[in-house]
Length: 364
Image 1 (tube, rainbow, N blue to C red):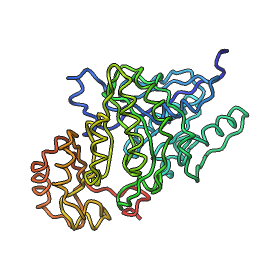
Image 2: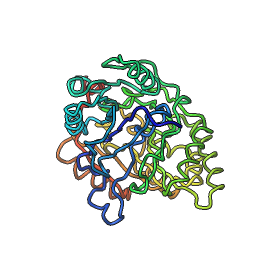
Image 3: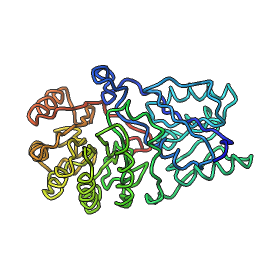
Image 4: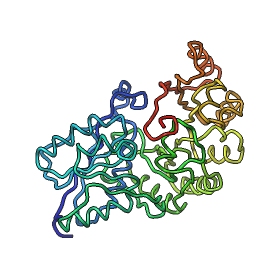
């Protein structure tokens, strides 16, 4: 291979201190952060081989503002926006072309356009290649919009080799996008739609083979609802079980699911056999009126305590997302949430204030 004619510097801006960053306990483990920037590793894999790519995650290392790159690529969630814009301005002052994607551009494009040179709205599996081709030709657009949903079979194996995975508590892969539910405060349907799109099972196992080469034994499957397509989830779990059997040191997994996991004993057994040791569930609140208010019907129509205990009975740890601030809440909700967490023995619970994320039904 010849000398690269271009270089791209991909950056994940530092998050503010959050519950999920475990910033105050990482010194005990020797790790720097929880999850690597999977989206940037995917963008790197979409980049032609004759272009050099470097990934910097500011959550584990300092940004090199003297980097001799041609393009700076930023990703950001809404909460990362202020820091992302600071980084963008610093590089633009140095004459670099700065591009940005991630949830922030799809949810709040107005805040992005004045701060960067190019924005990507929607998934980038197709538009990234178009941009690079036009950039090389000397004329590119200021905005690239992916209107149709991407076929997940077209998403490449992420460049795990460009991530300093020994600095994180786990690796990450994504197997599906989309969620069949329509909770009014959630941006997942806005970003990825209600139809669950799936990678081929063989495609996922190929990614896991690459992960298994890295210095980690834990994998976070980042799907927003891993069981959004149960038939697919069961096929994939059976393949993961078989894959684990080929490893001297089997991987263990965690993911995000809806509470209806508790209603499918076959699925629960497959979770157990696949070494799925922890799941995150959006419990939100034990108050039924608040669940109904926000269209969280899958939670409102079930016994949440019994369902959590059912999942735990398969040796699966439950991590819960909780929300306060619904219209039906009052000061008593804080004690109700505490009592619920204690009754269910949920070991990891994060309680946040209800937020109206742009473009969600709650916001509109």
